[in-house]
Length: 75
Image 1 (cartoon, one colour):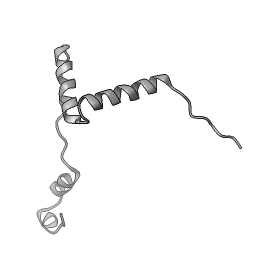
Image 2: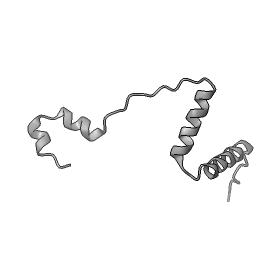
Image 3: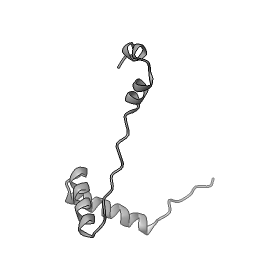
């Protein structure tokens, strides 16, 4: 029977270790990490650009229906 051994990838191990250090540093708080990362990028001179938010699918579907259809649609 052919069995494959998992490949050892040093770069993947390094990425996982970095992720674990950041999670510990920010107490697994993704918002705190994101804010710190954004602040760091701004300090380096990067410009932060935000995309406009997309409408949720249900809102989009309701806006495409006639008022009668939307009124009788369960939410």
